[in-house]
Amino acid sequence: MFLNKAKALNYITNTSASQELDITVNHSFNDGEVLDVSIELSKDGNHSDTQEVSGQISYNGYYSTLSLSGLNVSLESFYSMKVSSLGKIIYKGKAFVTNQTIGEYEINNNNYIKQTTDTTNFTIFE
Image 1 (cartoon, rainbow, N blue to C red):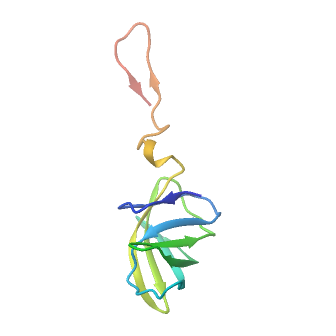
Image 2 (image 1 turned 60 degrees about the horizontal axis):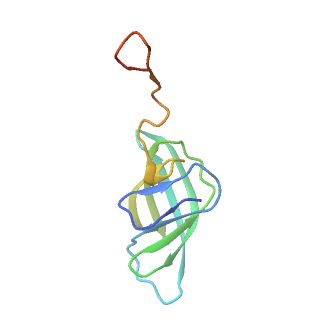
Image 3 (image 1 turned 120 degrees about the vertical axis):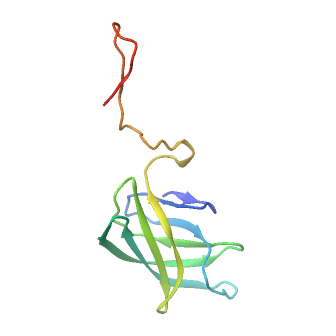
């Protein structure tokens, strides 16, 4: 599970395990209220790759915590997120899927291999 604490972009992993995201929703919570929601995820660039999962939102002061599970998402991809409750959209945003530690995230992680030779002074990226 990867926890995201009030960042501009939501990060999720490509696992079916339960995950939590901190978001700000358009809903007025009562004390101790937990809201059942449906989450629609659409992969950017391929809107036919859309899935809907259920989850719950609990209020935590300035933000709310969305708990969800059962995701089937692709690594290193962006997804559009719509969170709905009782037919009303209460959150729209983006999520990025990665299995890298966010503090050490590298865009080209394992995409390029640095090779050096003894006879030349340049680096080849493959």
